[in-house]
Length: 298
Image (tube, rainbow, N blue to C red; front, side, top):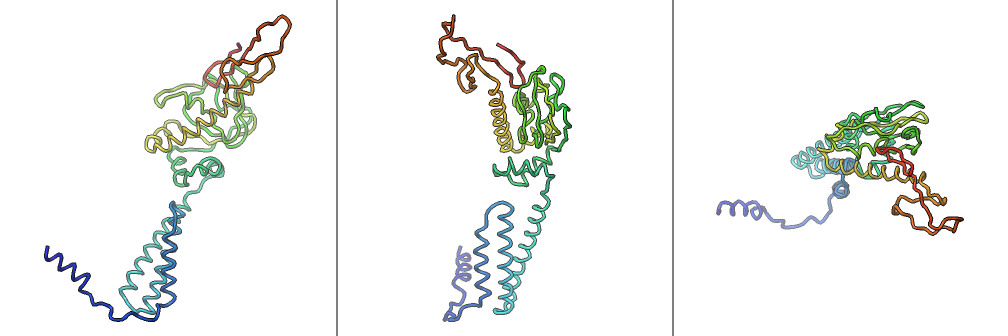
């Protein structure tokens, strides 16, 4: 214990004290280095934040090297700052390479900017979603089918990038699918990861379409490793299903001519004008299925 105290005293109190402080300030290069170092400490997170930090640190250490070489003439001060400068340059090159390597096709870039970027998903994370699941961009010609009712297996998840898809069941029109909407979100939500199924609707391209598609099993493997991605896709798919439900609402009417809102209870209590030979208003609701149910007319 005494040896530790002696070592501490030798390090802290064993150095000669300053008998007189320098009256003149250090050169402008030293102060510039200090200012740049403070600015570097204000960098944010993420790849661009790290790039900002290391660039300012590198310039700061460069200025310190110049100050140590020209003003102080201290080889040790110059050597340590030069080592730190080299480390910063290596980090800048590494981060710049990572940013430069994150490039996508136009369709992937459009999907990222429209959906994932507003949610705070970084480019490296989006690249993981694309590359790990072997996502690809597929072209669907006009009048070609993406899925056929009762035949096509549910083994992927697709997002429409351009064009328009018509959804029908037993030849009866249900709704359209527009760009930046999922093609098979109801099918995805209706099955558990271990289950298999087939489409209960037919999806036909009304125009030339392009869509991004992921393999279902690959996505589930990715979700098992990154739970936040599972929550992200769950939110996107739930929102997409809600949009499709409201699209179906456009086809639901009652006999009186009023529109029946799916947000209201099944029995729409509304006083209708008196009609001849009619004492009690009769409300008939026509049901249209959302993918997995067959079409019924009540």
